[in-house]
Image (cartoon, rainbow, N blue to C red):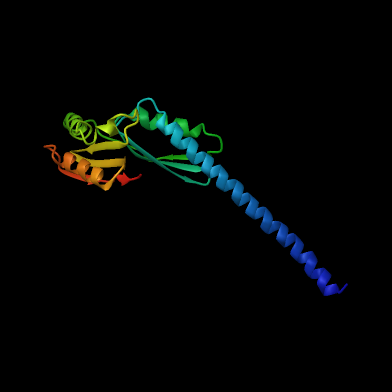
Length: 179
C-alpha cells in the first residue's frame, strides 16, 4: 500500500470515531434534556399550593433549570425549587420566581377576575380541569393573563371579560391559542 494512504487512514479513523462519539453524546444529552423538561413540568404541576392566580414557567439549558413566573405564596417558590432540585440529572436550579406582594385590593381583583372569566358561559369549559388553563396574575392592579385557550375568539373574550372588571389599571394578554 501507498504510505500516504496508510497515514491518511491512521488520521481519519480516530477523527471519525471522535465525530461519531460527539454525535452520540449530543443525542444522549438531547434525550436527557427532554426527560428533564418532562419531569420539571410534572413536578411543577403537582405542587400542592399551585392555584389559578400563580404562573410557573421554566427553561432547561443542559442540566441547569431556570424557574420563572409569579406566585401569591412564598412557600410555592421554595416548594418549586426543592421539587426541581430532586430531579435526577438536574445540576443547578436558578429560582427567579417572583413572590407577588400581599395586597387586599389585588386579592379582591383576583376574585372578581376569576368570576368574570370562569363564570362566563362561553368560557366555563376552562373551569372544569383541576389545573385551570387560564392563569390570572395580578400585581398592583395590573393584570397579566397566561396560559392556553382553544381559539382566537376565546382569547379575545377572556381579554374583554378581564378588561370589564372595575379597578384594573391594565391587562396584558399572553394567552396562547392551541388546538
